[in-house]
Image (tube, rainbow over all chains, first blue to last red; front, side, top):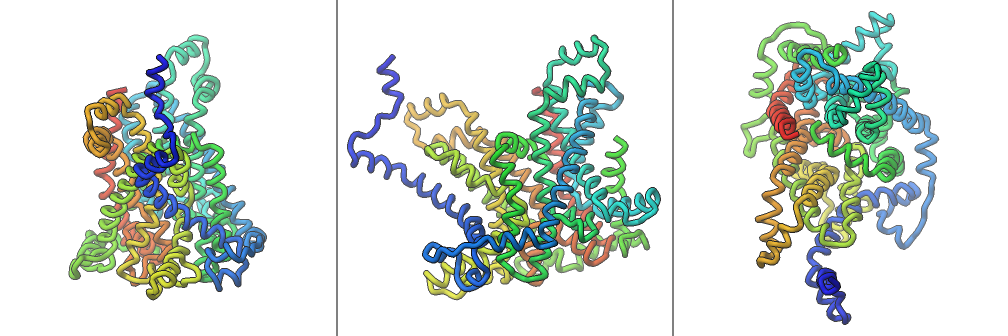
Length: 304
Length: 284
């Protein structure tokens, strides 16, 4: 036993020269990985350092020169967060993303439950149609949906801009596009739940809605979390739908505000760099705190 | 269900209808038959220009994207997935490559606009060109011959992590016994990769390829941020042109025709997904 184990463990080179030889034989792997890591890190590190530099410094010298002249400030972040536009657009992004995640999650979970545990005519055909709908490009629906929201505002609320001038339009639009994927993802999870469990609850006289709420939902937390994270980041990072469906300037989310700052003030890198990192902060926090669900969600989203 | 029909199926029909109309002010005005489509494919040089060599236009740019972006993402994803298993800092290197997946294309666009800046005191690439090689600064995003490659690489940076994670998960699923057996039989590392790992990765590679292709057809945000289609419309792609024509130009019918072209390009992918879903259902 012991000799076998010793063979499996790679013996540590005894001398320094032996270690160097071993390192050199494997060094191409290390070198390739290092080069890729540098290419992947330098762009964002550069912008991160820039976001802490005073405005005149940014214009007069590259960020790589700060290594010798460490001169950092939080002014850019102060300016971005206290500036009327950017600070409020950060909140707008939250006000858009959170309901636009919860709404499709709730409706989609109900629908997915119906598709997996309730019998109704053409169930599988309709489900297949939903799978097909997932890849329909958003561009196909932008104009008609905008028109739909305007007539909804006009006919129901008596004001043409009621839906598109509030968060209502963007919530509805994001929910509609998220539903097929949500139903697909959750249905595939729900059908893996043990049939006996659902049947037992039914025998005990629980209604479908009660089974959904008390049995299915608590067992599906991982799948629900994967979808929620995927959807939240999707909405947070979205630019196109906000450009079309948020028509009130005070309600614009951060992605749109930053792109406006860029086109109106030209390349104000002290604002753009700090703004980008405020925009990136939320996804990065989600990424590092919920990495497992996050990767699952993205992998599941590969069909979208 | 009704909501789904109202918000997803109805708009598709509406957009197809509008694509046969002038659609000024985004309303149906005047039926024009296939005029939008014929104009798109035969007259509009921003969309498709076959008179030059190589051909130009938004559609051609999408083909360029399809070839380069897909190939480079797959190559880098595969390279890192294979190599990272051999080093102790595997988790770290994978996190570094994957993180850009989480951030908005707006941020990606700005990060790379910064790298490509023509000012050698701002853009690191031009600082290297002028400072180390003594060459003139190059406005990567302002030149017609470099702009597409520059944006493609920026987007590869943002999405190679996806290819890496999927392929790496698939690699881990390959039984170590097979690889050890091959090694005992004297196979070198390259042969193991080429004859064992690569064939077993065929399915995940096709999944990633489909995902990247959908990405290319829907490509919009990064173009909007980095160049707005410029210079001289040379970096336009179909999804950007659809937005530009519809919402900046007010040509609802013309924009709808472009959207329908996008849908037609995506339909084969739709069938692939359904087929895959069906075969999974049978296995399951």
